[in-house]
Image (cartoon, rainbow, N blue to C red; front, top):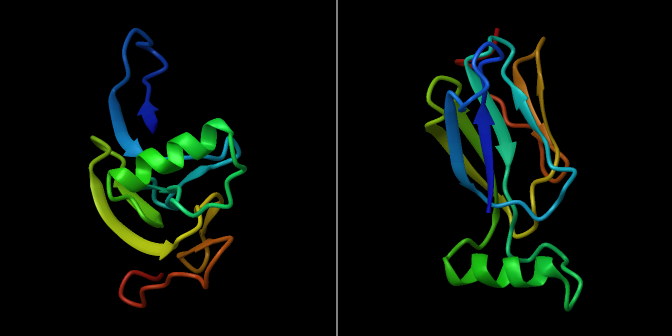
Amino acid sequence: MALFAVWDVKALKKPVAIATDLPSLNPEANLVFSPDDQFVVTGTAGSKAGILAGGSEEAMAREMAEKGITGGKLVVLNREGLTVAHKVDISDASVVKVLWHPKINQVSNHLERPHFSPALAD
């Protein structure tokens, strides 16, 4: 399971906040900050992520399936404290790359259509 930590560059002895339970099978997975820096968005792995047989990813995918983690999600975290603000089920595959477009306030990923809220758009 992957984690994400926020650090204060003036105090590097321990992180300010840590988000855990963000399964990732892809080293190229990313996260992005919202245009107003209030949120962090990342994707999680799905248990049917096209894993090669016999690799370490296969064991992790099996462990995820045993824990009931079946599909990749888009996870929105509050920047302060890294608590989960929202989760969106996307696919059985992993959500690897995410993008938050600053001008149209729209989140997209490499698998699905963009996610948009007229109430929150600028």
